[in-house]
Every structure is written in structure tokens, then in C-alpha cells.
Length: 384
Image (cartoon, rainbow, N blue to C red):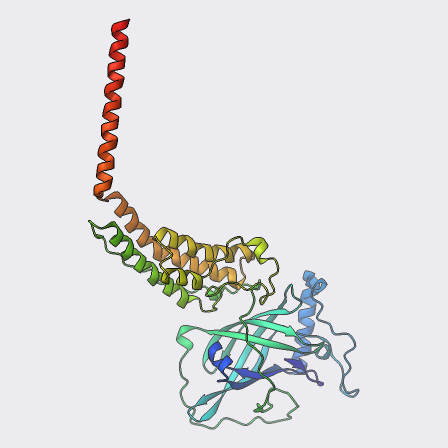
């Protein structure tokens, strides 16, 4: 994303349906932006709000010494970057068969929030021909007037549908076309494809990330095998494995599937705060190797994953914090059936032969001890 000489803020690049598609090169082109006059208006509104709240002290969006061609009037659009706005628009291509179809980004709302590394976390919403979506990502500053933008879109479940073919041809833009504007044709070569990384945690509220989960609990047999305690544990561990797979599938941002890499994510204080790192992938490996021996141990490991994330990402509205709380609540709901089965099994547990012998031994010792105490008491009474 960059500022053109005329003050338009434009972004050209590649997009894909998933991270796997992106890294494999299965991408299509997109572009969006905001015209110069609108950029100048929104820049003024944004700067006024930042000054009123004191945010400009730590986040100076003004660009000093930005010189254009000497002819084009310089406005806040040329000297402010990045700009929060609800008026970004654009288009993207989608391959259908052997051809690429054009789709319109009717509205994109973006807000940039300065992070500790000097770059920006990005969040917002959008509406295009495929539906509505939430967007999160990062902007890595690459100069005074440009940066590398990475966005992740999350569509509402009902909105992810294949659009109906458009019978009428797409209208050609009319009027003046300035370089890099919203009406500029997407080029086939937008430069090298940057390496995609998941967005880091950020503070703005993303309430729509909290999806309503099913209220159904994991089914566990009401009567576990009576004569084999190990069989009871095995049945419950199978249910634990099912819950683990559900959690992995629900981690849509892939925050918790692998160990946290503090170097790659630029988190130098991670190990100062987190004493015992854990992730769902490591738990899966432990389960496969039979290193988790009970449902209680399993639940402790799973809760550790999300409690670590909540502990490190302390801002309640950050996307990692919210995701961790949502998944922890989902886990507690699913695990409740297993916990109830464990409690019932312990209450109605039949003793093994060894346990029965140990109980009899303790009863005999107690009887001998009582008899001895009675004899001692009797001798003492007689002596008196």
C-alpha cells in the first residue's frame, strides 16, 4: 500500500482463498484504495481524533518533507500515512475454470493501530460481491509513504457462497483515470509475493469474532464398563481425542496449533511471562505417543494452552485473547460430560481384588487395635 503523487492511497497485490493456496502460488490479483480528496478529508478527521485522545504522542502519522512532482498541490493525503477510513474501495479477480472473473469490493473499512514493533495492526470490515467479512492483519512500514499490508478475511458462514454468474457485462469505468486509482486495471505483475505470516495480536475490539457454538455436549456412555477400570479410561481418552480434533478445527487463525516462536513473532518477553508453554499440536503428539494417561491430565494440558495465551495477551479485546477465551469456554463445555462420567465412575467404582484385600487388611488391623485398646483399658481399670 502506498501514496501516489496525486495523494491517492492505493494497494495492489495477490490474494488466495487460504494460506496454503497463497504459499503454493495459487493466487489472483486484487487492488483497492481511496481517492485523494477523500483521503485528505479522512486524514483530517483521524488526526483531530488522535490529537483529542492523545494518541498522536505515540503514533505520529504526519510525514515530514514529502515532496511530489512540484506541480500537484500537496494536501494531507500526501503527508499522512496510513489513513483510517471507511471509504476504501477496489476489486479482485477470481479464477473460474480457465478464466478470471472480476468482483467488486464495494466498501472496505480499515483502522490502523500502532504496535510495539513500530508497525501497525490492522482491523476492519468489508462488503464485496461474495458477502460481508471481518479483516485483521498487519502493515509493515517500508518507507515514509508505503508499506507491506497483509490481511486475513473471515466471512460469515452463510456468506461463503459461489456468486451467481453475471449475465450483463461489467461496466467500464468512465471519467478521468489517474495512475494507481481505483479504476486502474489490475496488472498481471504486481511484484514479488511477500511471505504471508499470521497477524500478531492487537487491542481493537473484534466482537464479531465470537461465534455462537453448539450447546451440545460430547456424548459419553452413561454406564461405563463395570469390571475394567482401564477400559473406562480408554473410552474417555477416545472422547478427549475427539475434543482435541474439534479444537484444532475451530482454531481458524491457527494461533494454538504449534508452539509459540518468540523470535519469529518478535515476542522477546514471552518466556519471562510463560513458564510452561503448550500448544494443541504438542498435545496431539503426546496423545499419539500415549504419553497422556488420564482425562484429568489431558484437560490440564488443554487449559494450559489457552490460559497461557490469556496470560500473555492481557488486553481483553485483542484477537488472541478473545480466541483463547472462546476456545477455552468451548472446551469446558465439551469436557463437562467427561468430568461427569469420571465422577460417576469414581462414585460407583467396584474394587479390584487387590483393593479388596487391602481393605480387609486395614479392617483386621483396626479390629486388632481396638481389641488391644479394650484390653489395656480393662487392665488399667482392674489395677486401679
